[in-house]
Amino acid sequence: MDKILVTGSAGQLGTELIQMLCEVYGPDAIIASDINHNAAKKFPFCSFIALDVMDQVSLRKVIISENVTQVYHLAAVLSASAEQKPLMAWDLNMDSLLILLDLAKELKLDKIFWPSSIAVFGKESPKENTGQNSVQTPNTVYGISKMAGERWCDYYHQHHHVDVRSIRFPGLIGYKAKPGGGTTDYAVDIFHKAISGASFQSFLKKDTRLPMMYMPDAIQATLDLMEAPKESITVRSSYNLAAMSFTPEEIYLELKKYYPDFSINYVPDYRQEIAANWPQTIDDLQARKDWNWQSKFDLSQMTKDILTNLPNWLD
Ligand code: AKB
Image (cartoon, rainbow, N blue to C red; front, side, top):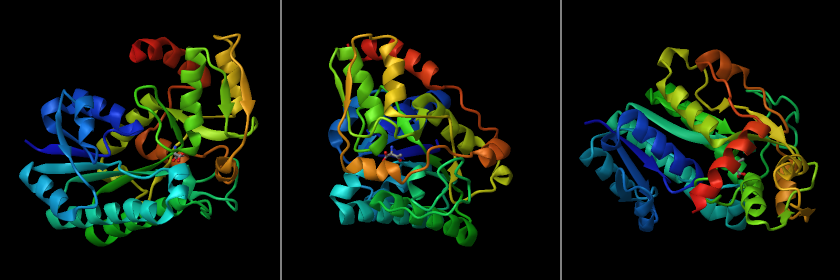
């Protein structure tokens, strides 16, 4: 049976993507993997392999021995964490992608998915309706690694016909996994604080508007892109994608509708500088044209869905 390998499975995107991949393709077709062998307990319903994505020999052995034909490469160090360990983050984000792209070429893998980010844009990029081909001047290690990674994806497609597909995700918000070092992760933590009756301290200023997306939309977009016919894909760097944009104050006020006593204070830290250089809204027309992308959740719909499901999830 052809298998799909997912790296970085225990992360925010991986946790929910694995569940959907198992629903769509069947659990026998999915191999979850993560460098943390304890992550196996998150995936009792499919195969799990402890895997270091920097270990080319092991990765090659898994692909061959397990008959892997598709890889979703999610392992990465996100923006805030990457600023704390720049060279390690650059090595992991870049070398792991290059190892995979070269294996995809050698072993003729069917398809690769690799997530990019709004972090490829920077101070000189338009803040509003940032376009598919807007200037990219990232000023974070994470953004630089994603910009370089996009170029390598396009290179391996053009020169070696590797079918690698990518999405520039906005901030992703889900309730099924703890956030992992992202500048946008305040928007995950705020739900936990509201539900637990605690006050919330925002590390971003109240009016810092960022593009955001509810995880179900992100998962659906990933599957839609991977299922799209090759000939419909006109972007081999990475597709812009949008769903909503909001500020810390706006998500706070949405939560206050459900928790009237919920309180917030704003104590910006180094992550404010990161967020201030990112776009506020994204133009995703090309994804809509090429593979019929359409988001389903806005802030109000996402908040209602999370508050309905998170308490049971935590029990
Ligand atoms: C981060 O905040 O680092 C990520 C991202 C926007 O790519 N969530």
